[in-house]
Length: 114
Image (cartoon, rainbow, N blue to C red; front, top):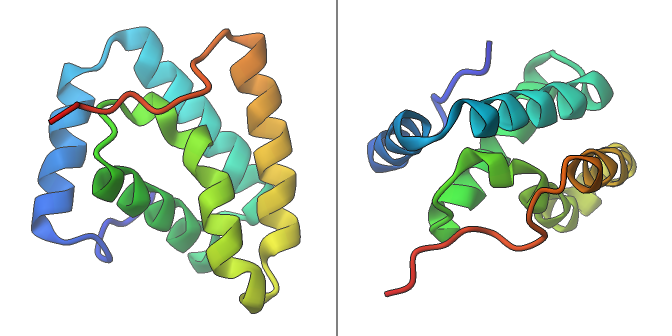
């Protein structure tokens, strides 16, 4: 289970709101992408923190669906490069991108325009 302890209350509310508004297929795509990422990153504290960092980036960027998860994995790679985690993140990016292409998912985040 991924703990959202590192996401502020507003971010948690946005994540919950997104989840409630998603179709069942988008929920499945989100779960599959997180599972792929964690299969590479590990399900330990480091892997879970990376998932939370992706979620935080998504909410900060204003995406409207958690199914965009795979689009934000590479953004975490740049942040984590100095921590020596970039190889695993880059590997996850390639695998998740393959998943997204196979399932005809968007290559751009679904954001609300203000």
